Image (cartoon, rainbow, N blue to C red; front, side, top):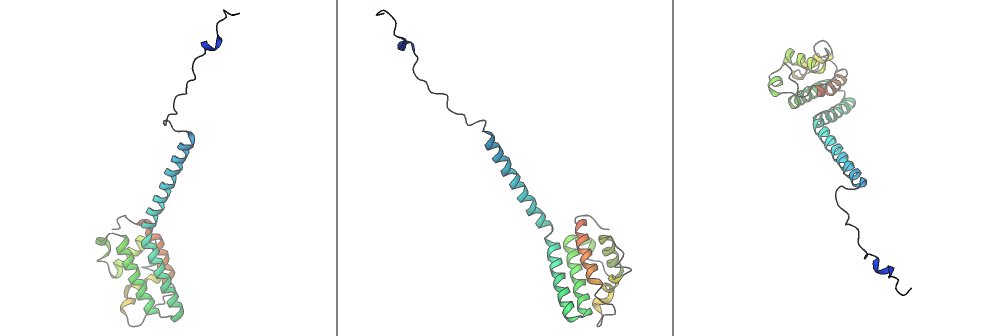
Length: 165
């Protein structure tokens, strides 16, 4: 066996595998990217929603303060005046200024009815807004007006951006 070939000489040298490619990423990276996109989308949607509903939240908070003050003092004249100013400011913030700014009297009440999907301003307790803020003593109670104003603020927000003629 002296003439036998050396089997070790026929072996090839150790070779390293190809380097790991960075593309395409592993499934874990795809899931992480998808999770990040979902989180960013949700955060942007929540932020946009909060900005769209900011006026409503501020108006409802102010109306809550009016309700508390009215519960303490039961001053109908003050409450009617405050609700009138609040509804006017809210309408100017939400609806086009050209549709709201010049309204007064019956046309203002009709606008409130149309925007809120009700007839309680023209035919119900909302009539207190027609002349109540301008009288020295309220002839109507504000107790029925406060829930009506709250309902209007909540419902009129859904019409935001629509043209009310």
